[in-house]
Image 1 (cartoon, rainbow, N blue to C red):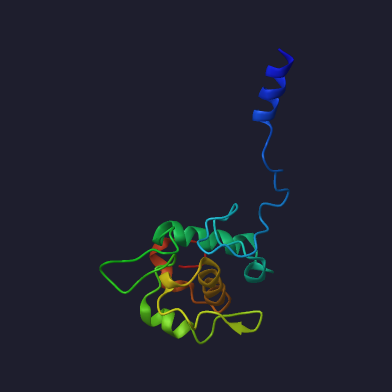
Image 2: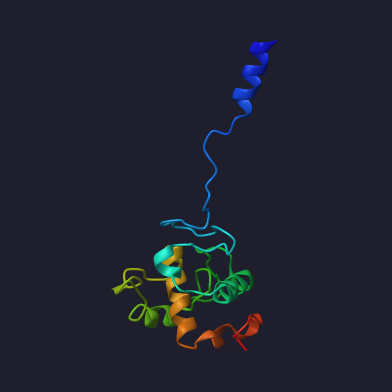
Length: 141
């Protein structure tokens, strides 16, 4: 009986300790992490407000929750359904810690989640949310 209890306890014990800070992730490539379901990369989101992150979540819920999303009827791709001309222009502006991070990705869908998040932050900081006007997300109107 005691052996059965010890075996049951061993099987039910967690295999790894719970993460006390699930919002601190270093560099996931596909996103969908944490309460905002984005890349959650600290160097990208440092200084962002919850409202900013909720706006990005709202846009992605409307456009594409997949950072690899593709639109078969246009050149749009990625979580924000960035059209190719917009993405091409952003590649020359989006920086994280002083480095241009989007330049090596031809389309948004080719870029990891944290790079697309950085592109959104650039657009957000420079008043470009109107491209998502049809989503009715905060700040896009």
